[in-house]
Image (cartoon, rainbow, N blue to C red):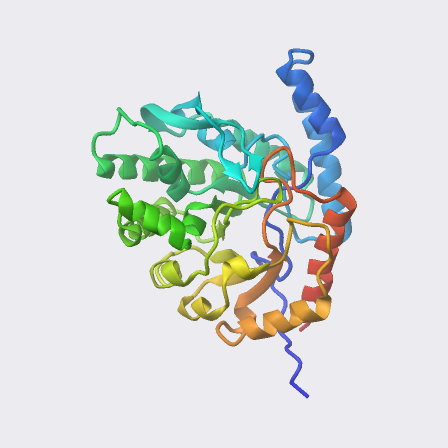
Length: 372
C-alpha cells in the first residue's frame, strides 16, 4: 500500500485550502446593477446594496472555515477592465464585434491608453478597506489584474501615447508600484494578480499567431516576468503577492489550451512572487511535470473546476496531489478551485449551492492531507 501523503498546515497565505476570488452574483446584485445602468437607482444606492451582499458573502466564507476571504468581486462587471478603467490615462472603447468563446460571446468592450498612465484615487482601494473592516479574524484577500495583462490587453489597440515600448513598460511598473503601496497602506497583506496572458502563452495556436505578427512569445514572456518582478520589487516583507494563471473563464468557457511547458523555464524559476495559483482541472492544462522548475514559491493546485457543478471525487483529488508532489514538495503545495466562480458579472454555469459544495470539497480534501 502506498504511503499516505501528510503535510503541515500553513499559518500564512497562500493557505492549504484557498480560493481564487470571485463568487456568483446574487439576484439582489444583478437587479441593482441593472437598475443602476438604467438610471433607476443612484451610485450610492447601488453601493449600499453591494455592501450588504458582500457582508453576507464574507459571513458565508467564514462559516465554511476559509482562512482568506474575498469580496467576491461583486462590485465588478469584469474581473480586469473595472481595475484598468480606473487607472488615469485609460478609456473604455467598444469593439466592432465580440469575441466568440465556444459559442458564447463576450461583451464587445475593452480599454485603450489615451494619456500618460497613473495610479491615483483608485476606488478599489476603498473597496478593499470595506472588505478588511468586515473580515474579522480572516485574512482579507484582494484580487487585481496583473501588470503583464495590462500590457497584453492594451497591445490589441492603437496606442498613440507611448511611442516606445520601454517607456510603456516603465510606466506600467510605476502604476503597479503605486497600487501596491496604496493597498498595503490600506491594510492589504494578501494581494493576487490575475492573468490570462500567461495562459495564452501556453497555447501553441496563440504562440503561432504571435509569430505571424512578428512577436517572439519567449521575449514577450521575459518582458512579462520583468513587469511582475519590478512592480513588486518594493513590496514590504509582510505582504504576500501571488499570481493566478487562467486560460479563460467567461460563463464556463475558455479561449486557450496547452500545458505550462512553453513558459515553465521562464516564469517559474524567475518570478519573484510568493505563490502560483495554477489551473489543473482538465487536460487543457497539461501534466504536472513543468512544476519541476518551481523554486521558492508555493503552488496552489486548481484541481476543482468552477466551470460546472459536477463534484470531483475526493480520492481522485488526493491522488492528483500525490502526483504533483513528485515534482514539488507537499509542503509547497496547496489546493483551490481552478478559477473564480464568476470572472464576469454573468457568472459560470453552476448554482450557488454547487459553488459552495465545491468550496467545501476543497476544504475537506486539504484537511485530510495537511494535518500536522
